[in-house]
Image (tube, rainbow, N blue to C red; front, side, top):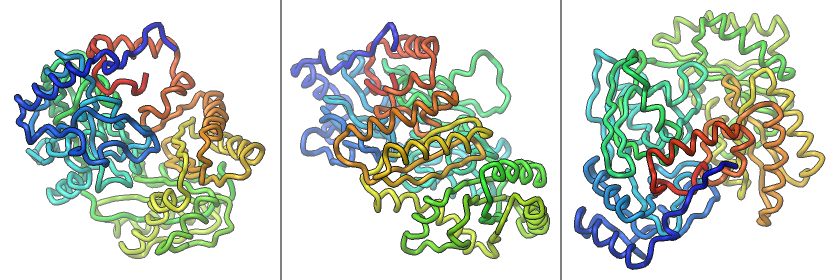
Length: 476
């Protein structure tokens, strides 16, 4: 794939050197802070993906940036691999430990250190759960726009390291657009402070972007300055049924124009997903189950009651145009939550259909309908024995496909991935819209990145982590 290749540091680390690493870590951080062998809980051995990692040398849970720096300085000196971990909610194997690595969990570095209401920023430690940040922003009269189903478990450092997307990208952008500053510890222990609090800062290249989306392969994020938005008190929410995907695109543009760009979420569900979601206990079907495609549209504001008439008028105009066949408008906050329970039912669906393979694809919005048709055709022609459920954040070009239960042969999964990713490549799309590359998708990265791009990625790795100790084997 590239002229240079990554080397697993553990391959050249002797047992004596490993013992020296553990001893040095205990001396620097204390015996109680460095866990080994049976002291390491199995929860640190895998994330939400099906990727299986190796047995780690040690688990360390630092409480400060200084301790992260000390850990990396020691590991860098010994050529010792390090696996950074956040909330372990990833779906690409990005946080799975490599064999013999030191697992660096950020879970103890949790907390909000500052909310600047004048600048509309929040400064947080990397291990802070996303939901804690959302709730703190709300209490301060603001809104932190990043949102995803794992909000209660995922950590902001991991969200930033994977450039998380989620439900609100259509209006607020990816994690990258919601971060103003970062503190990062480099592989050799150097603390790189980029705790910028300004939206405008063109004093040279913005180095924080090197680490956003790098999945812990270039440095370890320890703190962040987050951008807050004006507070919202609720939303106008509707579930609508449409005749085809062309109507979905027309409806999207109509809603964005009619509501002055305030559409906060635009979640599309094909019938297979809708049927599976409404089969989950406690999830109801606001609309009949026979329509070709469904959209959950959400418009947040500080005064949703004042916007309700305009929202309803927009829906009526769409029905007059034939883009919308049927609609259910949430009449209360409880009904709004019921509608969102449809979309969030994916977690239960994964369990009910386990083991699954989860595709996270993106193609230009105008091509999504044709792309999904081709993916479906592949399922019918070659994998008719498997169940596939299609949904996505389509307003930002993101398609998700859950396929399962998968046979445990490994062959079927590879064949399905090869078929799906070949279609995505033909559409000049991405094999990973928001979940990252990790271990699971590294063999397919060349479908979405050119040889020149891959070479630049490797050059950055060599420059920032010359010993290749940070999250070895991930991405490249």
